[in-house]
Image (cartoon, rainbow, N blue to C red; front, side, top):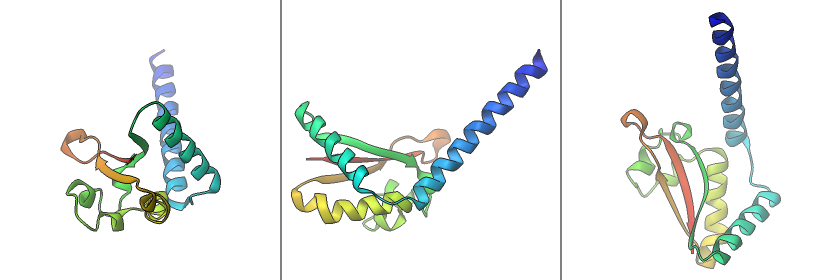
Length: 126
């Protein structure tokens, strides 16, 4: 039974690692699509209708940033240059489309597992 439990735990760990690798590949190579923009705008509208003025639009591991999240954590002026993949694409979309309409973007390190930067969270407010 112990060997069976260990085998199942190993299978589960490998599946989680594969899922994380797939998520990373999609994030790094992905592009913002019209469908993604439509879903975002719908989420923003629902949040505003619910009386909220901010929405967490996404998270990703800070390890995926070019500098491991250092520039975001230190709120350096050039933090957007550290964004990879979809994060960079979204920032460019925000600057081009949402910022001129009065929206604001806040990006921060959300947690610090073992004292190191963990997940990056991106919030849009209005």
